[in-house]
Length: 128
View (cartoon, rainbow, N blue to C red):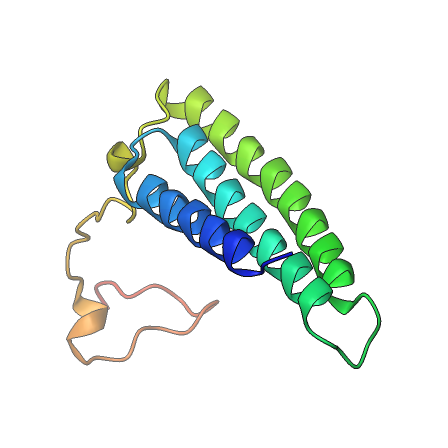
């Protein structure tokens, strides 16, 4: 078997996955693009395992199995996040997700101007 064909196929799959991650707006399609990239890595690992003499027997296949387990966990967590996002916002568009918390301005009090604040449990200040 010529190792060039699987390597080129894996490179095309990985490139397609990167394009999908960078250009898609739907979160489910972004997850599918990540899965495509992980499958390209699996193809590279298995091809390298069959073509190269490794110290560990079937090392690439074992790593590919770990990548499959990682992909399954990523799908579970990712879909849970997407479902929660859909429940909160009624949309799964990635570009509409706020990345920061809304900033609320608090008024500046006298305690922040450098004076020491009264200790907890002491009597309140008032007319003497």
